[in-house]
Length: 295
Image (cartoon, rainbow, N blue to C red; front, side, top):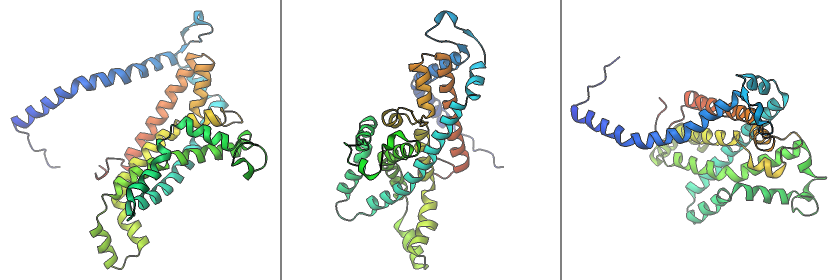
């Protein structure tokens, strides 16, 4: 293994100056992000219910045992996982198609991009309320497509939640994928075409490999965001009919139930799950900045 080239004194001085200039901002960010995390961990190790503040005491990992042995937590976990996998998969396909359209549009490219990104610019709660009214019987313009009240049944409710997620965040996925499309050289596509590659082969053998870092980043960002889904479920179903996500369940215990110990425990578990997702994407898919090879 080759030895690293020794840096000159000037380069070392520049590196030290860079670290010193970044240190204040880094310390502030660590304090702002680190304190809530550490405090949540501390709360998760206590029995702390605001309804009975005098009974607060340290109990170790008992809260974790309680949560991880509760079927409500695991039901919400698998519901969240299903929503994440389905919505992100659909968004990847639709986002790629939308990115290709926006990238290849010859006429009105700016208008096409603006119209395509409108759903992402709408506040999630506002968009969720629009979907809720659309599926409300006797008043919604989509309610007539199905019989009964779809938001009161498990299957239709989850389908509507996924559709709302896909409609809202597909433009974001397309925006990230467009960054990858910008890296695909027209010369590469022309060379592949001259070698006899079809349009599909050019897409799968040339474009996708070049876009791999951008695809990995897009999947990472959306998976982390989708796993923390709260707004759409809160507005559309309120977590009823078995449609609660882990974030919704945490809200019910922490805010509505005033049980800081259990709520903090669920928050820590969500944090660990999100960290695990990020670790898997970075290590397995090599999620780096678009244009950089996985290391």
